[in-house]
Image (cartoon, rainbow, N blue to C red; front, top):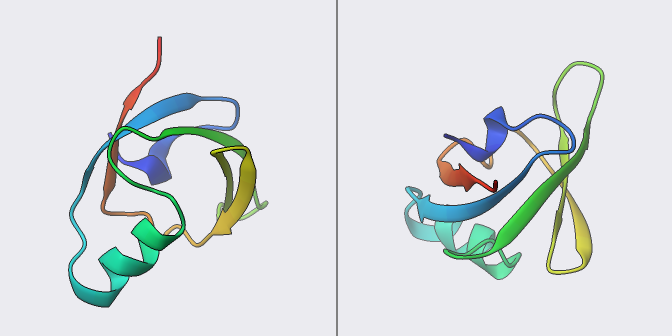
Length: 75
C-alpha cells in the first residue's frame, strides 16, 4: 500500500521508498525512512496535501511527493 492511500487516523510502518536521487534524499531527510511509524492526521478537502505525523512532529506533504513510499498498515 502507498502512503498516499492511507485515510485520516490510519497508522502504518514505512517498508520501502522507490524514489531516486534528490527526491529520495529529501524524503529521507524529513525522517521518512524504512521502519518509521507514520500516522495520517488529515487531508485537504481535495486530497492534497496530506498531513502526517512521524517521530513526534507533523509534516504536510503533497500526494505526489509520497506516491512512491510504500507502507504496511499497523494492526
